[in-house]
Length: 329
Ligand code: ADP
Ligand code: NA
Image (cartoon, rainbow, N blue to C red; front, side, top):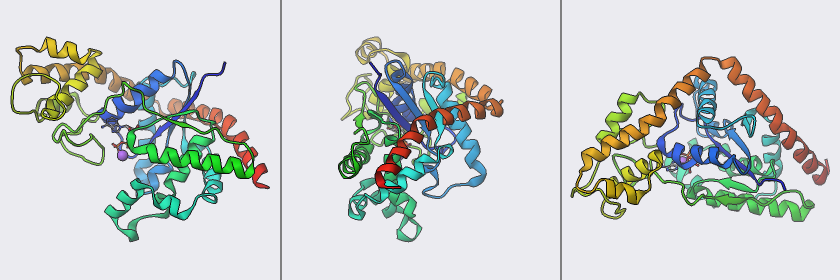
């Protein structure tokens, strides 16, 4: 039987992924390859919806792709490519935008939040139709599962609605994808404000970027905000800082939380931070080495991505052909 297909992507907005992206997405994507037909994309078209630096674009796309590879995405087993290399994404997005209600798109909370922050005049139409392009990304590949964070549920719901609507108007064409949030996926909080999700949009010393120097990473972990008290125990309500550090140690060191609590009985926060830093650097140092090797040979990296785009088009091309035929083109 065919393995279920997963599709996911991240924007090349920042050069470096952060700890949350790694534990919440990339590491999970690598694991999913074992029992899924995986399609992973660097979504550069999405990265120009809110202003960007053209000088940095290609570099950031390569660095993002290099991190996918260093994180274990295998371009032979899976399909790894850059969104703008496959024109079917924007072609399908146009068709889908013509069956999307204006009001329906206007209800997307991520758009409402982002546009409220930047104001109507500097909000682009591209940001408004972003979820429609995202629906096209997913539907082109007959995706069964989309590994995403909680904040993306509404976009996946829109994708399902559009797929269902297209199918009933024009004939059965698309698979309806499910959001997929693996049970074990860790949610990582900011080290300086452990009540807020770690995020690239909250730059500061509470953000741990994977490509930061090991010294800086260590320093940031050691100056993480902890809580009053001294016991190393999980208590999300009263000890969000310590709980976050335990989550990170558990994920990086493959050690269950209960074991960590036992191991730290009678020891303090200083020891905990030391072990967290060591466990993170154990993974991050070889990860960085691999990223730099890949970036040292951009021609080879580009050819991996070109092969990925060809593989992606083998699926996306026929999907778009069917769509155009059903629409009447
Ligand atoms: P950011 O919040 O930094 O803008 P994105 O929204 O681009 O990150 O998310 C990219 C991927 O990383 C998504 O799959 C998302 O669920 C995951 N992710 C982002 N931040 C975290 C976090 N703090 N903890 C766990 N996963 C995260
Ligand atoms: Na985000």
